[in-house]
Amino acid sequence: MPLAKPVRLMILPVLAMSLSACATAGPATVTGECRIFRPITSSVQDTPQTRREVTAHNRSGQAACGWQAPQGG
Figure 1 (cartoon, rainbow, N blue to C red):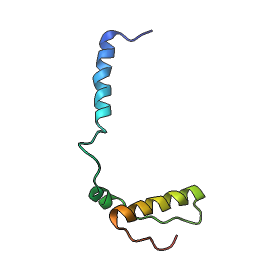
Figure 2: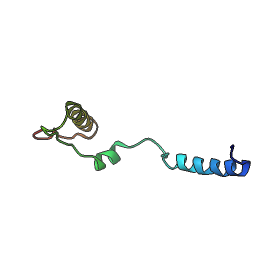
Figure 3: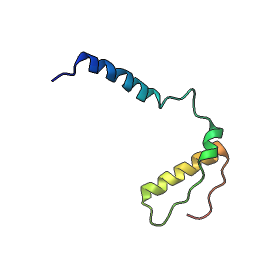
């Protein structure tokens, strides 16, 4: 059974508000991300995929934020 027109009209603004809540005023800043994220180390228990993701994360941080390579792992 299709929704009544008033219900559909009420859903539209709610959907628009929920989608716009994730919007930002501009692109993310490197300085903001550099304050939040830190280098991470992998573990011998990590899967090969996790190790690749850790390496990619750290390389991104080294390039964007000037991180030093983490010790160990």
